[in-house]
Amino acid sequence: MLRSLGAVLAGWSPARSGPPHPLAATVAAWPDLVGARVAEHAWPLSLSGSTLLVATGSSAWSQQLQMLSPHILAGLAQLPETAHVERLAFRSGAVKRARAGALPLVRKPPAPRRRDPAPEEAPDERAALDRLRRRLARFQRAAAAHCSVCGAPVETAGPPCAPCAGSAERARRTEVQRLLFAAPWLSHEDLRAYAPACTPDDFAQARRELLARWWVMLEYARRRRRINPNRHERQIASSYVLLQSGLPPERVTPALLRHVLGDELETLLRAGRADVDNPSAPK
Image 1 (spheres, rainbow, N blue to C red):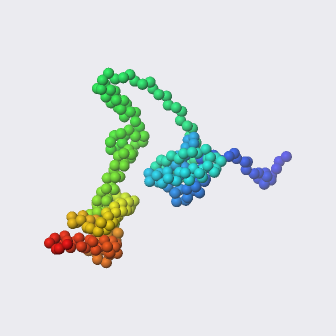
Image 2: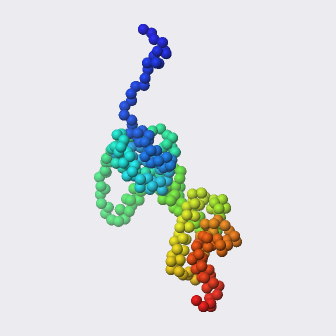
Image 3: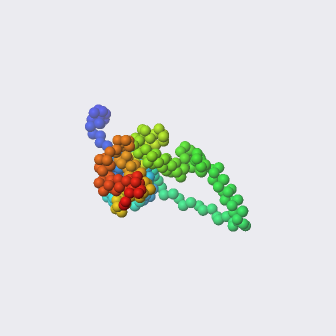
């Protein structure tokens, strides 16, 4: 018997689906497990056996999530689909692609690799080195791409390998700190005229590290109640005040020095300056 389309649609209901996919259940619960702010910088990527791989925005976020691992694993243990997850692994980068891309499939644990038989022992050191060079050359030829800086084999062409990228980042941050020590009143836009690759994060981190380092040294001088006569601590104090205030040297007043450094340290610095200006004065 023919039925009208309206009658068919009125009697239709979606079929019950099976249990949620473990990774889908993890993605759905992730913002509640770690919080909305953390979820912007870390996102579930794949499941391999009992290990959940999480994409993070940087190595710093990987370290932060590593400290939160017990809390996250405890939350996953409350879900029937993810109760088997026992370990978290982290991969820096590609968080936005992980959040916006299609849901990856759960990966099966890799099959055990077949080990090649051990090579015959080389007759001497020279033969062993020649064998090692040939083996490295085969790896170089078989690599999909090479680092643009050191030439080491890498998986994909484009950015340098991790050691070269880390070395370049450390050199850039060291240069930013050197410039900030020499001219602490520079803003990020001003400093980019001397270090074009400096990012806002580089600037903020260099400023925080310098302030923390200088304050430790100044606090040590305050506790021992003495300023070294070599002017090094006075230069550090000047850099600290200028970094904190963002003002050029000509606008720093004694009142600002006392406000930033405190009365005790400002008095020690003033006394040390008097000793430097007048070495013959009685102490």
